[in-house]
Image (cartoon, rainbow, N blue to C red; front, top):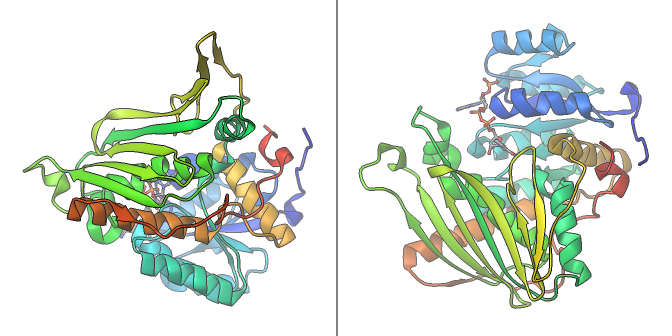
Length: 365
Ligand code: NDP
């Protein structure tokens, strides 16, 4: 393992936009664990909360910005990047505003709530000459990287099927996740996106057809605006079929199986932040891999910082997030029309991805 820890002045400085649950519980600790990234500013609509957090994190009141004064960050040479951790429908606005003041953009998933928004985000960042990365932590996680390597190596035989489940119960607390205008959809763009994106990442190809169903319990007020559950099937050019289930109405379960000719891989849990497990079942043995766990958010942060520092395209750029937004739109179309929907065909592997993270980046914890 190579220690890549940079001194503070050489790290990429970030303004984190939106101090909600993910920021406080996962991203602040990830900055602490990162080797190439530095928390430099907070952007929030709640100045009291932001000032309190700033003091706790070793920042000052001068490092706190509100949404209206976001552009003041233009003057901060020590802030090279922003991390957008806002409700989904606000991702586009802040990506465009950040690009206009020359900041590199790391944006939470889903990239946007519509294809039009996602396309605009990719275009505006390209025109401004700033990087745009979709924060897909799963693609920087050692367990999923191992699964992909095992699939590519041929050790499992030909991969036939993937089967992914990501379900949870979403309480009705006036959550923005249950409001269409803010979330863009229900369980699909939130938890179902993990099934979709992980299938695309593991298989490495782009699906060419999708067939889907949605269901919401009649009369449940949580699902007045967005769907509760989605079942969707994707077909890939090499013949692999991926079956996916997501829901806001079922008790927490997150698993993924890869079914291949000679052996099957099981990731269970597959999408949690910690304690992921990966098992290989063949006819002769059951093998559980010991994979060194690393903080998923620190890994993705440091990957983006490495890209900012070297000028290279991230492994999960805006185009990677845009492709998922396109497929999500096709999933909804298929469910609405009750028929399979064809997607644009793409040949080759990793067509929307940049260079993979270096091994040292991912094995460093
Ligand atoms: P929260 O609701 O906990 O936080 C969102 C924050 O956004 C709020 O605290 C608030 O911060 C700010 N905000 C600005 N405008 C609004 C508004 N109109 N309504 C609500 N909040 C607003 O959400 P999460 O932190 O769970 O999610 C944020 C983003 O991160 C989403 O895009 C989500 O999909 C993504 N996410 C990704 C995960 C992953 O594993 N990669 C896991 C969880 C979420 P303030 O008070 O500072 O202004």
